[in-house]
Image 1 (tube, rainbow, N blue to C red):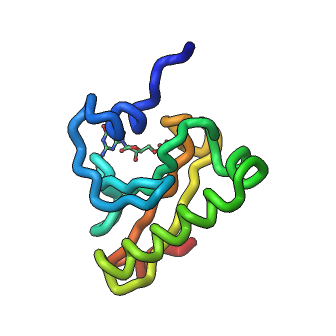
Image 2: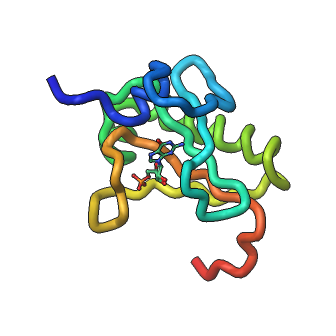
Length: 113
Ligand code: 5GP
């Protein structure tokens, strides 16, 4: 068996990180190295999917649950507008292969993408 991902270890309480929200199948934490005034991570409790492509193919309802929690959190933590990023593959900056969405908000007006 492979090692549990860092996010599974956080969910299990083995690594400290406040779980700021959760639904039946998804939880959220603050990113340890924020890249925006609001930078949250929305993560399935299951580590079955390595990236968003696998997740969309395997469980689109779970992907929808992630987007829903991202929207709820953006309403609570910023003005409701947010950027949702799924780094997919190491050359795109993915470092944790347990699918997760970055929710970025606040002060994003100057970004060009
Ligand atoms: P990726 O680079 O895979 O798209 O995103 C992984 C994210 O997880 C990074 O933004 C990184 O800062 C965050 N991260 C890594 N380890 C921890 C941790 O122990 N706690 C928290 N809260 N975030 C982490």
